Image (cartoon, rainbow, N blue to C red; front, top):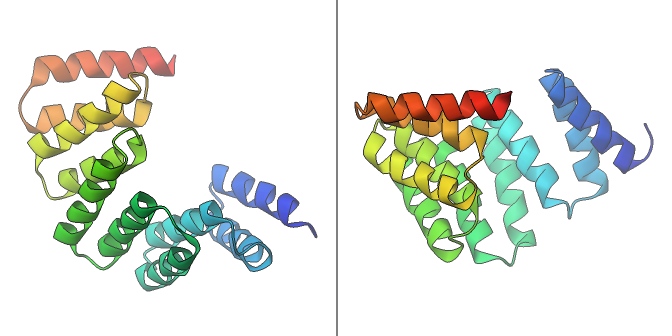
Length: 171
């Protein structure tokens, strides 16, 4: 495709069908033509991170920072960079700060909970996932993550209830 919008559609489609490497190339093309699109940089960074290309992901995330005025988003991206660099404590601090500045933005809470689960702190993760679910009770990702956190802390009954809710939402 020649237009950036068509390339973005193609990149999103390639990602959806699991053709990650091709999606990365298309996102790069879009980023080249429309450098101000923050979401494209975030998607590209995430894909690179998932592919194990942390250094490249950091560079993409860092390239987004000068384009941002919003403090919470800058902090969130700082957390993503910290994850890529293996600095869990810095990532937690960044996501906590972002969530504190934008308490109604579930993406900050979700990222915080996922990092907390990564360091096996089910109690802290559960607090973050519960914050997401208080904002959006039908959030499937937060529900699945909170199920895992509930299992980790040994709250099997509530975990089963959460799993039932996930299955209900997915139906």
